[in-house]
Amino acid sequence: MQWVYDCAAAMAATRPQPREVDDLVLRRAQQGEAAACRALVLRHQRRVVGQLRAMLVPAGRAELVEDLAQETFLRAFRALPRFQGDGRASLATWLVTIATRVALNELRRRPPRIEALDTITESVRTDDAAMVERHASARAIERAVADLSPAYRGAFLLRELHGLDYAEIAEVLEIDVGTVKSRLSRARARLRETLAEVHDG
Image: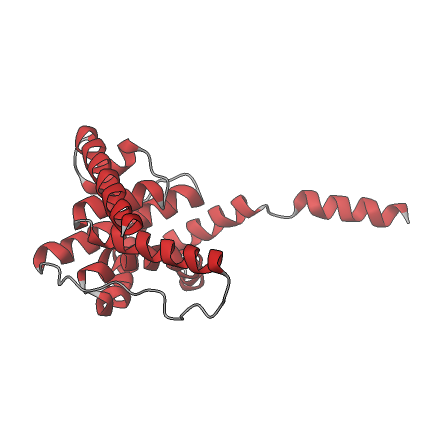
């Protein structure tokens, strides 16, 4: 039986690790391989669509999310041969960067239509008071984020949702680090005010 274990160990040692697989897919996509490009879309579409929804739905542009997701990936694939990143993490950040800029460009071209945000489509059917309270808190947070201006919302989402540091956010939004800090500070202050009003109400 020992040879079985030895064989399994040898196979495990030679099997590509997730990071190696990611890098291989990226290299093939950079060479224009269709299957690799599809794999990148499948791997990163949730993140891209999530960022676009968070930017566009509060502005009344939900119908553009799918189109702008396609635009994001089209821009990415045009620039992909020149992309010099460090694996999946930086590729994800790069795609979020493109998605954010696409969304902000759209919002600059056509000012937002302010509409009520209602991303929770199912009502809570429970007598559990704690569950109801959590549901209400989640809705309050969503609405508070939605009420932020696109510039503040973009900075806040990049920091809190995607974990970018100040320098990365500055690069994405094409502003200086001081402005990033200012926008984040004001966004957080506005969120605290909004949530306090909800709680007091």
